[in-house]
View (spheres, rainbow, N blue to C red):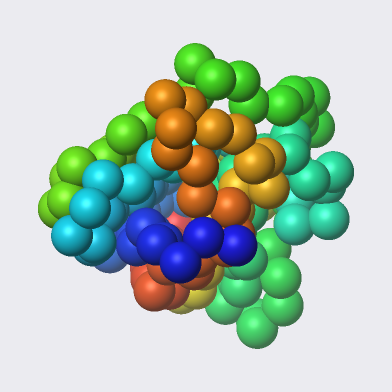
Amino acid sequence: MNELAPRFSIVGPERAHIGDALSLELALTNPNVEPLLVNGRFVVDEDDAPEGCFEVSFAVTGPDGRPAEFLAEVDGFEASQGDLVLLPPGAEHHGEVRLDRYFLLGEPGDYRVAATYRNTLPYTHEGRRVFVGRVQAAPITVHVVG
């Protein structure tokens, strides 16, 4: 694992309606004093999917305290050199995910959303090694209304 690691964050609405699009903004930030090479894809899949075929997994807990149902069938594939992003110190790389395309959010109440970014593919580019490892975002809560 690299010594340098990005910060991973998620931002979403505080409130959403059942059946509406629920978009989350994802960001990798370089908090280091030197540039950091990252896999910039944000492919989502379940946490137990094959390594290297996705970068982001979510743990969504519904109003009843149980995990929300994962709905998607994801055809994951390995990242490529073209997915690599060199982040200067302080820079961010952003992506967006529609959470409602992956999870059943059909009951009113508070949903706790936690996310993990991971890269397992040890690419190098122009003499730099890509970050390999996992980082977790601080969880957020989305209140869903009927």
